[in-house]
Image (cartoon, rainbow, N blue to C red; front, side, top):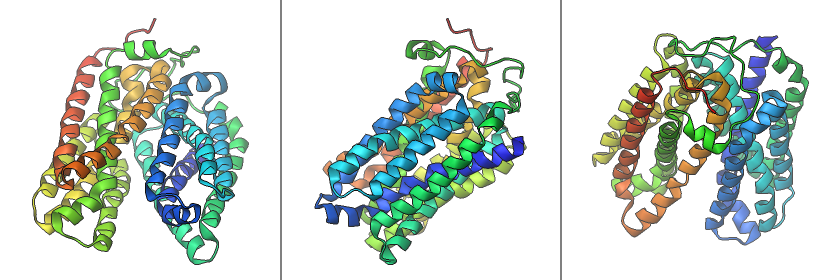
Amino acid sequence: MFSLLVAIIYLSFISLGLPDSLLGAAWPVMSEQFGSPLGYASIISVIIGAGTVTSSLMSDRLTKRFGAGAVTAVSTALTAAALFAFSFSTQFWMLALFAVPYGLGAGGVDAALNNYVAVHLQSRHMSWLHCMWGVGASVSPYIMSFALSGGLGWNGGYLIVAIIQSVITAALFISLPLWKKASSPVKSEEGEGQPPEIKERAKALSFVQVFKIRGAATCFMCFFCYCALEQTSMLWASSYMISHNGFTEEFAAMLASLFFIGITVGRGLNGFLTFKFSDRTLIRCGSELIAVGVILIAIPVDGLTIAGFVALGLGCAPVYPGIIHSTPALFGVENSQAVVGMEMAFAYIGGLASPLFGVIAGALTPDILPIYVGIFLVLMIVMHEITIKKTSRPPAEVK
């Protein structure tokens, strides 16, 4: 039965990635139909981001009350409903309105699922599950392309994904009894986890209590810095190669996908590496590979720039799932949902560093990308090492 639940969780991670690439793929057509400037896509993104931050911060309280399965199922249903609403939208303000439940649903799924996997499954599953997110995010542009080329329009693309999400929602609701029968929390491979008999805290923690947990604040900053460098690299790779290497827009756009492919493939490989190496070791190795990538993209040689973005993607692969999976071991199973929810919130806030780079690059030049990303990398490494040092002792009880 638990194996069936794991399969459903894998399916849920694919569904989590499906909507993420739709807006970018469809917006050129959508903006023309609505008569909205191309830059208005950022408004929708910010609204969705605000919703994800809000639901991530509420995840501890909601999960404690309703359980991870129910929160995941309802949040996926909320996302599916928002996608249906998107498909029938005829004006920009409608997109902005429906982006609210879209973001709330996405954040709820992200926080609940990530903590559940961190507590109940081994590290390899965390890497492979985030690889599945990459599969979902990779497939959705093709769905949108199929809809546009087939005469269904962007509305049809959103409708197809909404139907897929609805099927997954139904599977989640049917699987709710399985969540209650799930096995006890697993002990970390590093031997740092709480014993399986420790139960999760019955009462949700306040924000102040979460920040008082030893090492939590630096962990959040580590997550913020990682997501800042990841999102910046992902969004601005194409512009950087046009400015730095003189590539055409079409060629640069094609090469920019190498970073995303590097993350997806890297997380698939990382799952196998977890059989031999700990989360901590893989995070450190990933940070070193990111550093290599930053150095390579700074060198004005076309081949090295391309290799650098691949290295960046591969280096990013173990960091996100590694930090999340190590959360119960570092901060205690009873505190993990509150900490993971805050990690998700800081992750989404860290993504705002990407549009900030656009402002800086517009005033200066996109060529400063390696410096910008490098600063966040250094801060991330420092914050991670401080977190490890502060959590080297057993987690203190939160009052």
